[in-house]
Amino acid sequence: MDKNELSRQIALKVEEAGGKVFYVGGCVRDRLLHIPNKDIDIEVHGITPEKLYSILEDFGKPLSYGKSFGVYSIKGYDIDIAMPRREKATGKGHRDFAIDVDPFIGTKEAARRRDFTINALMEDVLTGDIIDPFEGLKDLEDHVLRCVDPVTFIEDPLRVLRAAQFSSRFHFVIDEKTLALCKGIDLSALHKQRVEEELKKALLKSDEPSLFFKVLLQMDQLDLWFREVKELIGVKQDPIYHPEGDVFVHTMQVLDRSAKYRDEVSDPYCFMLLALCHDLGKIVTTKEIDGRIHSYGHETKGLPLIKTFFHRFSDEKVPLKYLMNMTPLHMRLFALAKDRSSIKAFNKVFDAALEPYDLICFSLADKGEKAKKEETDLIYERYETFRDYMEREHVNGQDLIEAGLRPEESFSELLAYAHKLQLAGVGKEEALKQTLAYAKKGKAG
Figure 1 (cartoon, rainbow, N blue to C red):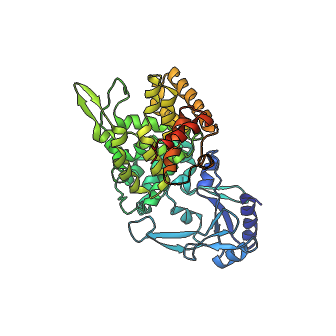
Figure 2 (spheres, rainbow, N blue to C red):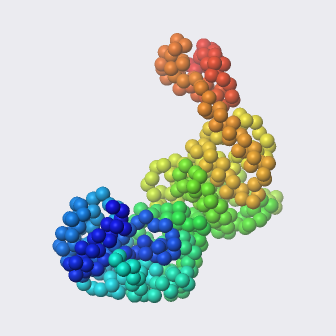
Figure 3 (cartoon, helix red, strand yellow):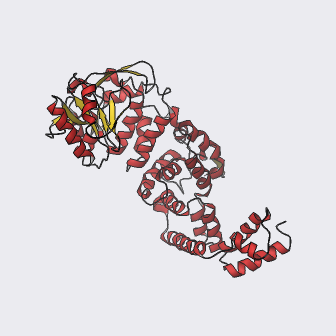
């Protein structure tokens, strides 16, 4: 059975035992906003944890996340089954809470621990009735993000990032009191993994991810975790090429344009990070020379800044490798197109890129309305040629062995030479002849 039917079956059993089951959190909010959401969270009221566990055994093997948390699931189902609980801060971190499970506290007190009113909504699994103890329906209608309880809100610093993330995803305005609370919360105790989770949601789920950073700036909370992004503010650009303003304004525009390509690229998260980081080098390279603003070498001199920025919130290797590879190339395609460069020149850039099609998408997002149609058409034309060249038969190690060469360290250099011939459009037969001649002359030794 699917997760909704499982929820209904559990609710029927719980009701027989004298309890109630409610959908809670994001699944209720998103359903009311008509936004697809595959996650299902239910909360079970009015029965003991022992009785709930017994009921869950009827549907499979219950999995518990600790009796003190009161959170369960059933093996084979991606569903969270929780019991009402009270939380009290014991420290400054997101996880520094004492948790007291209490199935009988009632819906209002159970919802009080939620961050925002739109997330405090509950829906009776069996009847569909909406429980709205903190006027979340009105806030949904007014597109307002408002905290449930000012006293408990400030106990969890992650809520600052969640506020910015929700504002970005749903285009909700944060009410003044909640905004004031966010300004005064210390984010230093947050674990980097939780910061990255909120960043990912903003970059991948919002059609206007720039709002995440603009809201954090409004909260005076951009400095700690995203300080390099804040340092883009006030970094000038040549108005001839960038009439939109400083590097921060440009980066925010590129972020929003890049969001339109997320479904096309190889790795949406890596791609959106590229949009965020591509011009960090302008922080250290921007100078005014003879009345003109230049940022010579920013695409490579910004790599140390990108590393520092990225490691602050992530230890993932794949995104960093992507950024280190793609950032230095981000201006090359339109530069080549402007000069109507050769197929070979384009092929070198496409071959150097980890994801050549992603590079095209990003180049278009970076250029925006300034992308000329004839240059864009040439880039796509050259890319199709590159793909054609790469799909042709080419010289490999077995070809060299069959030609009488012994496998040794020089093979890598010979294969690199053969690959250059492939990029130049030389057919396999001719490429093998030239590679063997190259080896015979001792160039590879």
